[in-house]
Length: 300
Image (cartoon, rainbow, N blue to C red; front, side, top):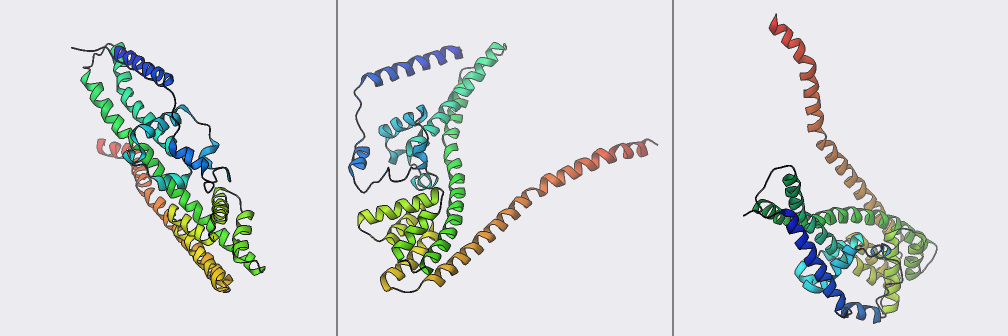
């Protein structure tokens, strides 16, 4: 027995409409974690504008938030470290996963309907099985994209830390205290990295801990050890009163060398990827030019 794909689509839309209607009639319950986060004075969410809060909440974000409340973040196993690094909320990431999964699920059905309009009847099992397989594959696509974006964001973080080290060194050379040097250097820079550093320093002040401890904690949360090293250096100056200007400069120089080496390695890797396409192009042009001459020689 074959089932018309248009009937399946209409049935799915009707069920989705009923679910949305029932959900709208039910009284909304606030998320306890969000309420506690707003009540906690240490969670200064409005201190610096976060990147993921700058974008408006889309229907996919709302669907992702509903999915998180229903299944729980532990069930979905979202990569929180990468999300924090790129500045994306868990709800937005879950919404992307859900949207792509639905797209993969409905794509074979739409293709089957197009084939039916063209006069080619496909069994219902083929779009159903292919749709489930595509939905499972598309579910993991945002995770792969997030991993690549996290690598790029971590690279940007390293470049910003190199500049931050130089600024802290200049502030220390101007006889600024360790805490003042960290704070003034963060206020000079622009960009999302310096915003995170300023936010971390201010949070540390309100929590009653030293700024270098806050930076050390941030380096662990984001898995950026390059930020933890200057925090340790400044901690020596703040606790023992040692002169750390030369150490900061040496750390900045070392980080610059590491970044240059990484950039060269990435350039070499990109060059290696171009070897096969260029070789194939040369071979194709050789055959295109040499084949007519070779065919005339063989004919004579």
